[in-house]
Length: 212
Image (cartoon, rainbow, N blue to C red; front, side):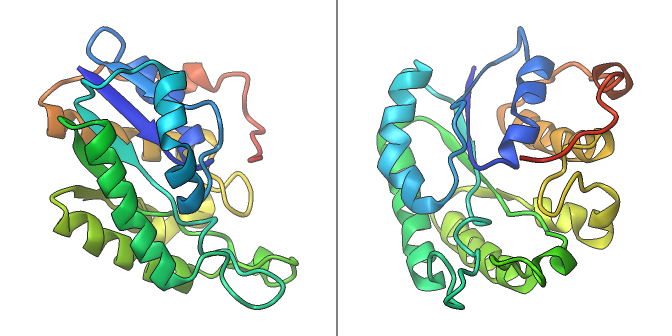
């Protein structure tokens, strides 16, 4: 089994732990780069495929993009408009089908941010925008036959307890919650079973983790 993980720095919080849990069960590939926003994924997905060395016979692609796209710049506009984002998500679905023709596809929704921080920051984020972008992406992916891993819904009610900074979830509990859900989605889709991770051991010397 081969799995490819594509996504922004939220993905960077769980990718190595997913790989660790599925060692001996599935080969897990991901770019070491922050894949950031949808336009960057469109431009570089082929390049990352070559760099990762995963080949054509990938069984599943789990991907996310949205938090960079919906970021509000000082001109008051999102980096990528909602209409363009929707179009880009469709094009990424097409690219995944072209580059990984036998792969199942799972889209992970963008996670909630700490809105209070962004009220005083020169770049803005609002969870309402993230919800709108998630809804648009989910509609497109489902229409293309993919499935959705709703990380936003997973964290929505209590996300502040898991944050390592205004955007990321690199704390022990944040990593555990997100990684475990990603693993469940991958295992269910491919009918495989990974090993349980001991987060107390993994984070024994990482009590003060901050996002990048």
